[in-house]
Length: 217
Length: 184
Image (tube, rainbow over all chains, first blue to last red; front, side):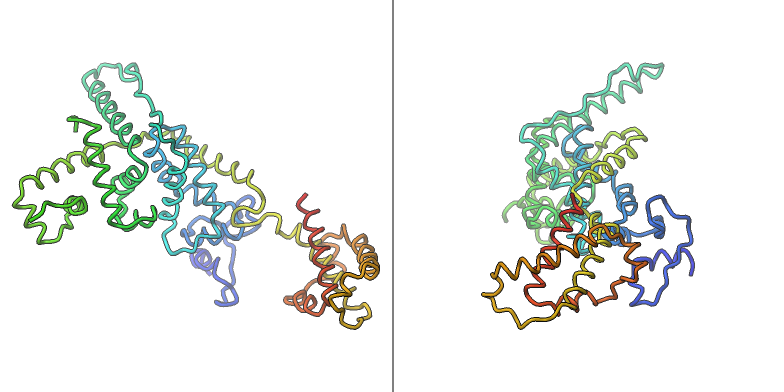
């Protein structure tokens, strides 16, 4: 059996298929001689994680950590909180592995968890946002470019702060729709609401942002 | 005709507005202005990227997650660590021995519910099982295997079904005690 087919069939019941799983790569530490997680798709990683393989869950974290972090950062607007929320999201995913039935993509499931973690944790007051970096950082001969970069960053910080001050559901809808290209239906599924409510939240999020940003956009 | 609703304005942003309403939008300066303003806000929002953390951060995050999961109670997650072979093996061996003893005991007439409360009978059975529990309490899996005490698939289920109500109750008590001991 080739490595590829071994990986593909590693998590298929041997009795049903007649496959014999052959380990053709060196074992990763702590995998008890099981097949490598490299090359496994999300479904296989989930199955392996549910079977108790921590290296499979590590691979899930590695694949999705950037997306989860970005969702959290958009929510809170600062690195420290985003980092804590990302960690919490993955821990909850670990706890909830048995409830993952595979109807949705793993990424959608993780979005749901991350959004719920953010919705539950984010305080009602505006969270602190990361400060704009010092102008010293940009001081060199390209003063004009540095000033433009500073203005751009100031503008970005203003927008992030405005987003972080939106009501929770509006914030979640805006983030998932604008930055993660999720459909209104997907967002409705994640937030447990209707498509109509999702569209209304999106509209009001943009309307509120317009007010918060004044004439700047 | 009425102006576009919030839903319809969002549809207009997505270019999914129903044709009849699109005709209204084309003809309505007010609605068009709203769509233009929403597009401007959306554009300004979309341009804002998340600051990229240090390249070392991602591995740091993975480590944090790993550490946090390690600190989770053992029943959490996909694999229940306390239900693995090193813990299950002595329990399985114990269960096997208890069942073997129970099956070999002279079977008395079916015990009526009232008999189950008979303290004298309970004490006698407790004593017998206590001896077995003492004997096999520290039996590990390798020892059980080398002694030929391997449970064939379904054998435990069948043996448990053959036990009387009193025996099943005692088995449950012993297993519970063993699980508690294994977890502690």
